[in-house]
Length: 506
Image 1 (cartoon, rainbow, N blue to C red):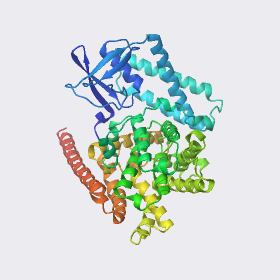
Image 2: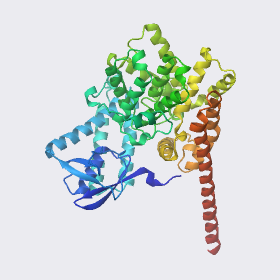
Image 3: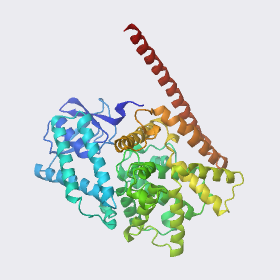
């Protein structure tokens, strides 16, 4: 599979005229990165810092900060503020992170599973990431605190469903970004690169999409309620390697680009567009990072609750409508009861369609309709909407290679976390998720050839305009991974012959 370096980020700092290289894991928290920058700059770890690029603009200190080069190092500027306040802020950040972890579960069993996963990740950092002694000690302290917190709460079911979905920040802390015309135009294209954007910027982009499609106007959505809803959506996506808020944004942006590219506003009603966009936003809410197969085999609470039938997708729907049940986050508050009931049912239908276990069933149904497709037939339109959200959900390979490939690394990392747990718990392990069996080319070739291309080519029968923008990039990606597989096979053959020759000499 790919190089391990994909798990690390490198930036360069200008420290009193000398260039300092800093390497950190993309799984580090912003607090960890800030302390690392303090150490590299020779200032106390508790100092407050600002990071400026060559133009003097501030750079966010987090794992997604843009790469730079030795020729364009970032400048570290200590800011005013006492160490005591910084320590208190650090302590509050730790408490907030712990509270968020606990607030993202309905029952204590799910809480235990999530905290155990967090502990395992921290322990892995201690063992594998080669951090300095001080950093190692900090991680161990974090682990100890989390264990104590879990033990102190293990005997009480302290989580309530309504607390889980409480908005943790006000609209005032959600800045409104002015989107340039270049960004507005780029948002309409499948080539959009979401890696360049921070969460608040992505929230502003989502807000723009709802306004641009006329949904805010036509359904009299309160703009402040839209902001609150998007904030609550963001806060109810977990920080998984793949199924996270950035994935939510990418799926919704691809839906927006398909609406624009295929001129769906001329074929669908505004209600249909609202359902498509909203289902895309909500489709993976509170995803735990372990798929349906794990839920069923491990007999988790979600699997028991939903009788092993699409437990994750049913959970995503439930969380979505718990959010809508809060008046401050209900963008459908102006719908009459019957219209809301219809919107709810159709949104649920689309989210449930993202269960890949139903892929063959849904695509076969669409193939039977596509040659004589009738936009006046409600069943035909619903089937098309189900296929559209499926396309968007697994559309990363439609994007340029430099945008798509990091997502493969993220997905494999999440797969490997699951397969490691399955091995530890004695559960069945899928070969495509086993770090000892899968490579990046083998993971992608079959998926692109037998899932993505057939589905997008079927959609192309209705919308020929997607061939150049979406189908051809998939074909190119398939060809590239097949070439990589040939290279891997050749290298393995050379290595095998070397080993055989060494054996003969002995």
